[in-house]
Image 1 (cartoon, rainbow, N blue to C red):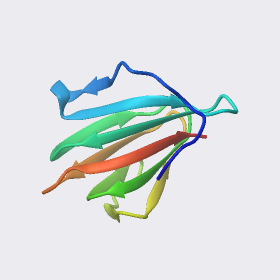
Image 2 (image 1 turned 180 degrees about the vertical axis):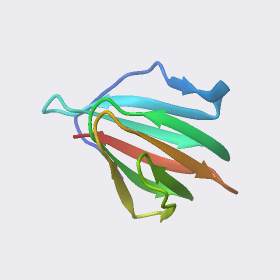
Image 3 (image 1 turned 90 degrees about the vertical axis):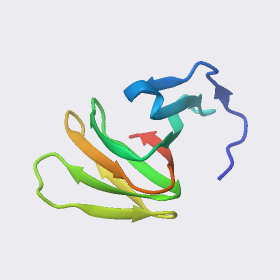
Image 4 (image 1 turned 45 degrees about the vertical axis):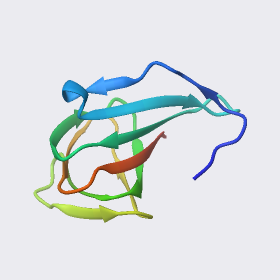
Length: 103
């Protein structure tokens, strides 16, 4: 995946003692995306706005707040998380790389 004419924010967003790291980019239309990697482990995140997570490499299991369902996502797949919600992401094996779009 490649993005043209973006502004990259050099300072990383670092979570869970460096086990989840992302960098923000600002698209030409002003929207923001984050590009990141999740190392093996279980992590819980809250959302303020709706998000779409596209898996670029690796895989993960996800449980979205309010469901008891665990879904698996691999390279080329994506999932959405509602605003003012939360989700748990579980990565086993190799790291999971993603692009997060704020909807």
